[in-house]
Image 1 (cartoon, rainbow, N blue to C red):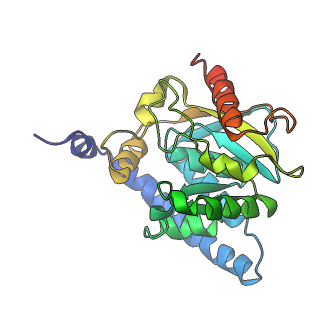
Image 2: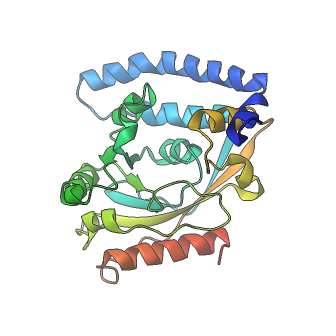
Amino acid sequence: MASHSIARVERTHPRAFVRIAAIVAVLLVLLPLHLLWRLFDRQSPIAGLFLRSVGWIAGADVRVTGSPIRRNVLYIANHISWLDVLTLAGQTRCAFVAKADMKPWPLIGWLTTSNNTVYVEREARHTAHHQATALQRGLLSGQPITLFPEGTTADGSALLPFRSSLISAVTPAPDEISIQPIALDYGPIVGEIAWVGEESFGANALRVLSRPGRFPVRIYFLAPLSHADFADRKAIAAHSRAEIAAALGLG
């Protein structure tokens, strides 16, 4: 019997390959512009434009509620899918905190590095101080950075526990750094989008790209945390999780 992920791949629709071709075409157009920008050692806006374009090609219609802080901010968000990266970066040009094993991935690793991703070894406690320092350095560069404290994707029916270790980089938060929770909501189709279980990235990507039509993604930019009230990383994690759960109606 075919595995769950393989069975899903077998249902791949030709529209997935049409969308992949469109993504490659956009990459070929934008790549020279990105390399030219980097040649002058400037932060390139092209990576964010590419990610936004890929999200649109995949079918995501992004709707924003609330006001995002644009600089020197750590976004704390729930995590459902690889589409989260496309929609958030497309709206805010943010970088991300990601597992270090993503860095050598063909093409994807290069793209994430080009977008100034902060790589971490999540299980390497002896490097926690260096990772926190790298995150704080990234935040002070001005570019927003998004942290997914669940540590993995969830199915959208509930939030996983929020890990607070990397929040220590902003505990207590320097005056020039803000912390803003974000809720990502795929509505009733979340189960069709979520990347969970044993499904591989490739299988999930083909399944999502095979979907007909378009789908809404709501991004809720919630109220930023008060520096005075949240000097403890566990309190920041707990408060952010509660605010995100409330915005998503998860109780």
